[in-house]
Length: 362
Ligand SMILES: Nc1ncnc2c1ncn2[C@@H]1O[C@H](COP(=O)(O)OP(=O)(O)OP(=O)(O)O)[C@@H](O)[C@H]1O
Ligand SMILES: [Mg+2]
Image (cartoon, rainbow, N blue to C red; front, side):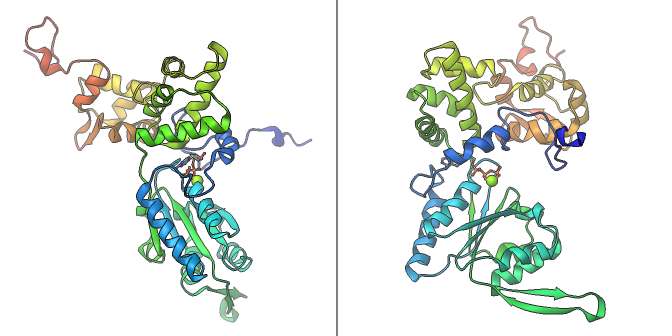
């Protein structure tokens, strides 16, 4: 028996940091449930009004012409619906979809094999397109523009390029980092959709929809409570809904009210604004130990007992987005909103003789 088979697999590309209920990346459970929760057409896709309207026009026009749709680039943070939208594009076009990702394409030959096996009109979904290898990327330029690839046969001076015609297809590229795409690649997409974080009302709709599919009894207030803690991200909203459902089932009668949602997410340490324990530890250290900063990242990391990268990549982006923390050349500083969120008073307001020692006080 090969004992290695039983070892847990490790993914070197996985981001640093602990698994979190409010993490935006998909975990194992998400992957299993998400297929069931994905909207199947544009009509069902919640929010992103502008993207939906534009995409609807692009797809309708292509259908009316009996043509293959233009290549589409979807950019946006993890969990906002890029994969979902790619499947919707294929469904709306009545076309099959082939799914692959940048990191899975090591050599140009891998891409040539995929491209040459596409059917006419097929949608090729290339996830994490910013992580493709250089030679593959260059092959993709020609494939996107001319529906042709040059397959190199042989090596050295005897190598020859054999041109290969491709059937017209629609490339749907997805990236969390549009800024990392080389301009020549970006320019070859006929339509670019930038996905924004969702408003609380939109997340409430996502949660109601998912509750219906999961057969969970959910009150409007309960949905609002979960939405407010979901960091603008449908994936997180769906995950929190599942955890609240567990709680409602075990501790109550199964119905998700505001009270139940709030209690459940309290147990999971996700606060009213969607901060979890790590986020709050960072903010608390910044306020209590360093008077709101500025303090260097390394010092802050030591103070919360985490790796520098964990603080910088896992906790800070959301704190910055929420306007709770700012990165300045002199270090990290807390904003007035951070003091308010943790129910604390900034030092300058304490100096007025209320008996407390202000940090910068006399
Ligand atoms: N607009 C939406 N309406 C309803 N549900 C949505 C919407 N957007 C996303 N979801 C749900 O959120 C989950 C995550 O969406 P999806 O997998 O498409 O995200 P993603 O942008 O591809 O994330 P990643 O960057 O990690 O690949 C899915 O279960 C999907 O059903
Ligand atoms: Mg995806």
